[in-house]
Image (cartoon, rainbow, N blue to C red; front, side):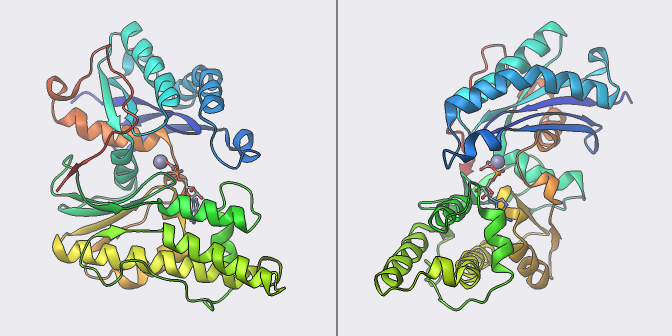
Length: 341
Ligand code: KG4
Ligand code: ZN
């Protein structure tokens, strides 16, 4: 059979990325141009700045990808692109680039859900046995997704308010850390103890739902109250604060993931998204998920990258191009969601 080569684009947030995947599993290149230094001073991603950087970087990334993979356009099978969810202007840059490349080279265009990408990153490192459950935790999303069979994604639970990564970044701001602060809080947490016992939201409900805004408020209130008593806890006790915050987040993620797997038994548990890089979460999962296969992707596949988009696109391609192919009228879908179960 002829080899399959998918050229994929990812520009949903602040990473411009282009990848080429061979036969669904062999990643020939995964070029990532990060803009994080341009957004740090604003304490978050500024959509207009993100779009402008994508415009500057996208052609450079395409050229780098083709060169690194030693592939020419006429060898490609299809072009894939993230259609959502994400920032509208940022998504549009990738979509325009993908459309243009596909049209110029007479290639089919496959739209991909960014969260399906985070989920299918697992397929780049291991074989997913279905049915599978995925805990997807990033800066914009926290959800549990049931994958009954390859390519069918059903949301079984999500956050009511803040995403897990958002909670890390907001608490990080109070700690005086630069954006994004998940990684640094994770490192600090490993040097401290859970001494503050922050609230674990919705632990006693039977709903597969997360909530992190109460935890964030509890954190901010504690810091203020201690400050009023003359105790600068940020200066004096940062490691224990980080450990306490992280313990609360990980407890909730673990409990709700286990609850989802009770309701929908699966053979494989996958984690994905930027927060899946969290060492505390990875350690707990490795220790406690023993009956199912556990796929924890390496750090390079946890953040946004086009390799994961190519992996999800390959699954779409297997459904038959006539069922999945988009036309040149493809538009960004900033609020794209998986259907609920
Ligand atoms: O998936 P991602 O790269 O971008 C989005 O689509 O949102 O996730 C970024 C998020 C940020 O909120 C960042 O603080 C968080 O992932 N993050 C972490 C860690 N590394 C990144 N959160 C907790 N622990 C980490 N080690
Ligand atoms: Zn993401």
